[in-house]
Length: 324
Image (tube, rainbow, N blue to C red; front, side, top):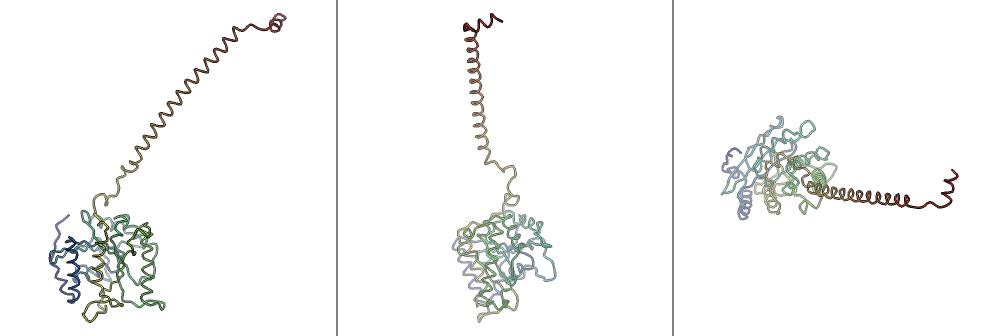
């Protein structure tokens, strides 16, 4: 892995003082738990706001964002340090191209992550995407196949474009609840995990509004329609995921290349050999018993023949022979 350039996190100074204070408090909490490095992986379909979310968290324009330019295939890592704490955020290309999973992009992402440890996954989608479909399920499955089910224990679903007016006369909270439930169901189906396997409560969902039209509170912080300052709220969710007792994802050679096909079925080899040995022994015993039975029968038949030869025929049989 190439040497990584870690720069001072100057972007934090662009936040309002209230946001800065909350972020530094959260980072200090992680350091108290002996966490001095945090690596966040950002994944999802293209055009959902992954790069914009990375820029918002860091307070810097570190990832290129363009509504009229396709995403590059190579992931981008942005590393910043502050007060002895290092924050790594990895922005990735969209996982869908032409209505199908972009296997090439997925392979590039995995190899880019080789020898890295993923502490948190931000799975990004849009709040204003009013429905989920089979393509969403395929994206979840592709992430699961690449990094294992365990990555969803380290995941936060991020819904961008959070400052919207819900359709069909729904109020905001009801629309958010329905959208979240539909997306979490797709995550469980795509990852092939049972509901109780995820965190309790269910996998956390964070709302994000990256645009300049995001409302602000009296302290100048970007806030959601419910008044929550979303940047420190998202970072707080990240610290909670790190402390939930699950293990981070280590991207090693086995994870990238998948299981060795030569290892398939090795577990059953001792059972097969034991069965073969048992079968061979049973077969030998059967042949042995048949062999003994054959000679016993032959001896009985021979004895019967000898007895018949020594037996004196009755008078009527001798008479019949004489007449003949």
